[in-house]
Image 1: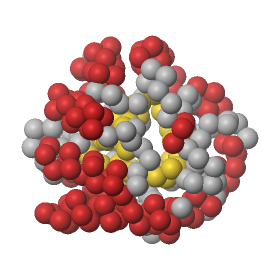
Image 2: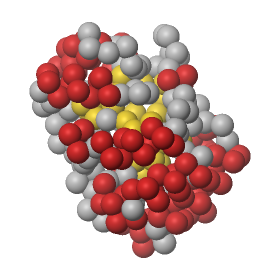
Image 3: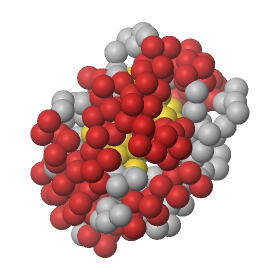
Image 4: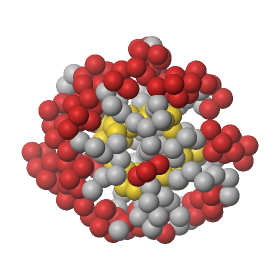
Length: 259
């Protein structure tokens, strides 16, 4: 198993930015991945563009549509990932819905992901109760399959997920889809405290974190990792030709406040 847990250090929350593969186009996407590294990312979530992203808000949906129109199919995404992992050492995790995995073929998908040098997969719409097949393939290949815990997850489901997690647990900060939010719900603090009684695995929080100040607040509540997606994807779209520089600087701002 490739060790993703090594990115989580005491008193230094891991910064885990998310961008959409192929947005705004494949060559720029490769430069943006390097910008995330230059800014101080500890691990990168690379989203595979999908036409029906159930968990994503309008910013990421629009980016995925633009990426698909620019030719970011699975073959292109795997090449993007492989080229990145050959030149950088920051771990890469693929974020994908289950349909692309199923249509490509689970075994073939895991084999291609492994050959591309990625460290793990996040499949938000795959329930843990139906994940045994993909989990076994990932385990055999040395990939981590990362599970999500939502605010609505029952205690029983939380225990199943934390017992199965092999690298970190992805904690969803709020109900609904991804997207920037004005504030993070205070209940997240209690949720993190409860999960820490169930597992020693690191807890990474995502969905809705859009400013360095929010990231610091969530870290102070006990998060071991901070996932930022929509805010970075929106920045890329708005910055246009200056996206690489703007993204580097924005990631640096998050890294600075997190320590």
